[in-house]
Length: 228
Length: 253
Ligand code: HEM
Ligand code: SF4
Ligand code: FES
Image 1 (spheres, rainbow over the protein chains, first blue to last red):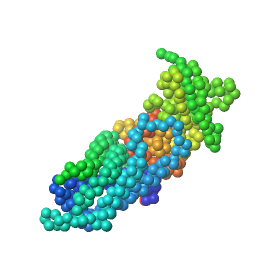
Image 2: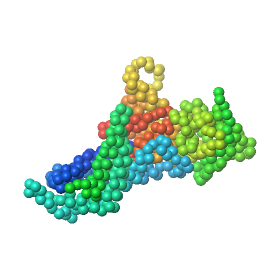
Image 3: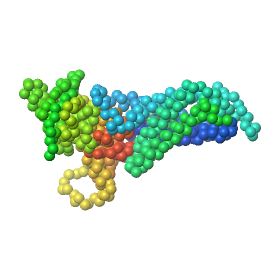
Image 4: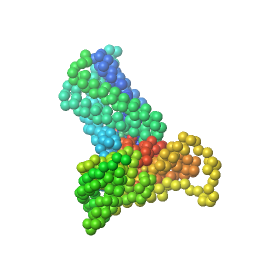
């Protein structure tokens, strides 16, 4: 048994998908919680403070590198797995099994992941690159601290209709990706107890819907100027 | 028993040999009894083809009682046809109505190449079993059945996994042509029992390696295999295999 097998065997590949997937889920929890600060309705003060904290310490920077490593592993492994799995059939069936045996979104993880990836590229260009590299205008908080005004950047980007639409589509894809992926990740890591699998499946549905809806409501509430 | 006869249209995959491209042929069959099995309907059609001097349709079968796993047919988009937890040989024509068109294809997977018509080569499964799906014991007198106590719950789970008949329907149903339901049934069956314990780690690693070599895909946990399996093997077995594989790989030298 070698390290190579973890990345290349049919089962090992899924271990890396499941592990990286769960790491991304943990990240989503932090991300959605932090962004929910925009609804404090304080002109973005709480959100900007929280966002500043997320980039301020060395610990956060290390975690950010870890996040990128896991995203990279998940994307590369996911796309390779999809290509490899698709190559195994040979001649296609004339009549497909379709939805009788499985849910459409469980059979579309590669497609859903690719839509999420396209969304992520736009998302990085809009927010991550300005905040790390090209610069965001500053704002002075009530306690005199100067931080990046990411709230204003959000307001600015979410004025644009097509960007809001892309975000909504990206988040719907995420919802379906997680509706299957959440419980699948635990199976990949060896959770075989039926009782837990039922619980994880139901929890996964709730998680997928709540997190994706929360993310969707961010651009939507800015687009319609629901925030002061 | 209520009984009726029906006329049906069959679209059957015909392929002379592994290198032939193959195509669908359409056959009209009449006076098929609702109480015939699906294979008996093929027997009737083949008798006629032989009388007409044509090549009969090749298909696999052996026991015709749902236990050998030979009767591989992908019927109207589902391995072993429309009924659940059922094999093709135990599928009865009452599952269909007069005038129906039924499409019959072989299992489709590169690891199961077509030999002829509906017959596929499933020796890849045999090689996976040879890679570790056994226990090594000295032969001799059978030991007393009660010499090795087994917890009831484990015995039941092992027995349920051992019900797999190696038919390959799971591969046929899976979008990835994955053999993991089959392999996991074998791994779980032996991992749950004391007799399987000594070779527990090498078994799972070697069987998965052979499975990869044969060209089967990996598991996306869609559940299609479980829904089509004639023996009700559950995908919890695959999660168990994942755990066995992880433990084996983390603790190997
Ligand atoms: C924040 C974003 C994402 C999250 C939270 C996420 C989460 C997950 C989880 C939990 C799984 C289940 C893993 C398993 O079954 O073991 C999964 C599977 C998968 N992900 Fe993602 N994912 C994300 C983005 C992506 C992206 C960008 C791609 C790239 C194209 C992708 C491609 C895939 C594929 C192909 C699978 C299925 C693998 C299989 O066949 O089982 N995902 N994802
Ligand atoms: S797991 Fe079920 S479908 Fe797969 S080979 Fe065994 S009996 Fe057939
Ligand atoms: S012929 Fe043996 S299971 Fe169908």
